[in-house]
Image (cartoon, rainbow, N blue to C red; front, side):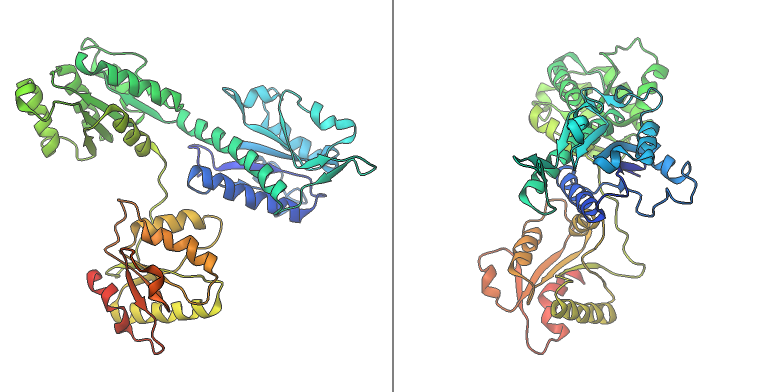
Length: 450
């Protein structure tokens, strides 16, 4: 699935097969990286790399890829202008009206024009002229009239970042619009925080329910109509007791919904709290008789909203640990440096054979950054090895190991270097690589994992 629920592809890349394939590939890869930097996870960009337009049923694979795409990016060039295939692809995306208004979301369009080579008489500007276009060229004086941006040039990279920013904003808006959050109607003493939460979520483009504050007169069926569709229910509790607020909590718990419960200032002092509310608060803190799928927190309203925003962010898929392994070790090294990769394989063989632990290497491919981040958070041990790889590689990845987030489950982390003094003063175990490596050299790292 794509980043946006209900869509298989995040972006459909439409281009003429007569255009330079090297440029198209560089654009696709740069766009994927740049959007990932903004969203924190990989997206799926579909392009016709198998040349399905030739000799296969267009309606099946290409047609399905178009209708299941959240965004459509046209790479405009004279070849695109003269391509019947490109015209058919865009017409399919703009169904039923054939206008970009059919795929407009607020002030954003799901159709983007990227101009690689301008059309004669600047006709690309009048091609769906309501839409702005993103140029990958600059005009020059003389017979050439323009120069195109070469892949990996600063001009090319800056233009890609502008496209990526637009797509990231679009995908966020689409995803959040398909995510319903139920913000339970509270007692009078927390009405202001309730209004602040709803305002922020709506500004973030989430579908916030109910439309207004409900009262005890509403039946369960009406309340459940929104709770059933919500990805998260939010409950705000102050010192005052409201049986309707408790009723909404229990309905969400009975439906197995994930709940975020915020306890306002003063709720930790029994003398300031209604006895019935104190009993409810104690049951929440002890998870007594309530669903286990809840988180409760205190602090300021702003802090509560920040936690709520983080909770709603998409999470990368969990990477399962191999059956039979007692722990997983993420052995971070540069696989493109042969000597480092060969030594990493030696360590992997020793640890898996003698310690019965799973040892995984840095992932590759389109989703490598997402998988790398997930391994950092989910592995029991993190071991970074650096010898002959470029210093730029070390500078980039050592930070990931040194400064893990609070939710990382690593019980042990270490760096193996030829010169341990490079990490003097940092809170990490540093192991010097000996000329005659023995598995015992890793004992300071391995001990916490047994």
